[in-house]
Image (cartoon, rainbow, N blue to C red; front, side, top):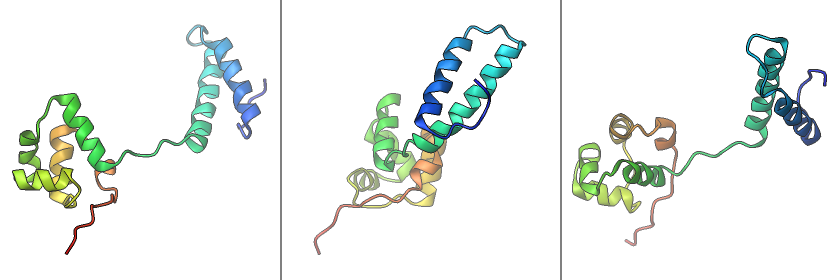
Length: 125
């Protein structure tokens, strides 16, 4: 297989087969260099054609809370008060820049997830 950009699904499948054959290549050999180049081509193709959307900010907060054993009370240090926690998690209030920064620092949630717009619940007036 000659080295060329991956433009079609057939190219992609062919490249994956070539990678599979090179997986046991010894380091610092022409085969391992070829594996590196082919892997980079596949990564670029997958990034363009199989992009993964960022999760919803509120779902991300809940996921990070669950995986770290945090309760709603633990979020008060990031969101300001019990009422704020409730309003944020029930989508009645938007995150502020300060809240986003604190969530990023405390839970490690990437800011690019938290700054996304998300739908708030409609309140009746």
